[in-house]
Amino acid sequence: MSKPIETSNPFWWMALDIYGQDKEGTAYIFPWKQAANGKWQMQNKFAGRGVRVMELTFGTYLPVNEKVYVIDFGARLFVGAFMLEFTWDHFREPSNVAGEEDTQLNWKRLHIGPNLLGAKSKEVELYGIVGGSVMGLAGLDGLWAFDVGVQARAYPFRPFMFYGSTLVSFFEKGPPLFDLLFQTGVSFGPVDLRVGLRALKQEPEQSFVGPAATLAVRL
Image (cartoon, rainbow, N blue to C red; front, side, top):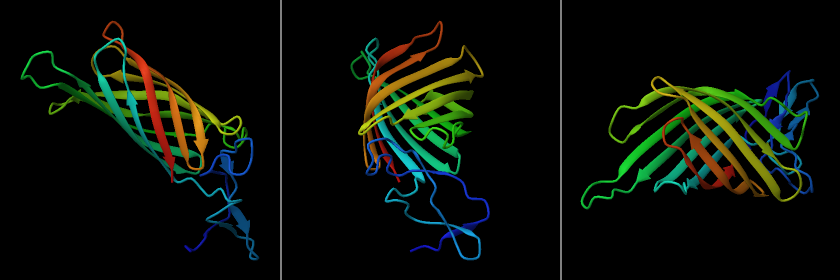
């Protein structure tokens, strides 16, 4: 067992298992125990839930108004009240010309932001995020953007959960791009399974709307 972390200022952390043995969700835990010397020590386990350090997500997105296929990957690091995330979306548009390669586009994003609610609402996480992204065709230089948005997760009662996010990317050229996602699903232990609707809109350019599915694993 690793040596406990000692601190004089304990704070809430995120839970690995949202529901544990309870019917209602508890996204926050207080994994600390006060030692005889007055110092607070972080325990590896707390009420069987454990501390969430990372989250990995794998998903797919199928716009119904365009012949485009999208897969996405995300990695998130949780440190106290802050989240650092990296996401990668890979777009593929099949070619209509025989022998011609499919068009491929990559969208990579890096964001950071605080949990705005903290432990004030135990069933809800709400993050305000800022960061940057780059989008471009495979093998070519991409366009850089400044990103700002919010993410929300809710665990009202076993085993259901809800996820929503709104992100706006302001590119160095062209109009801003809005990325809207809403999903509902189930949470079992450290795993969430979500399905819902995603929309990408960039006026007056082409927009995508369609179903999106995500597998999230907390570590």
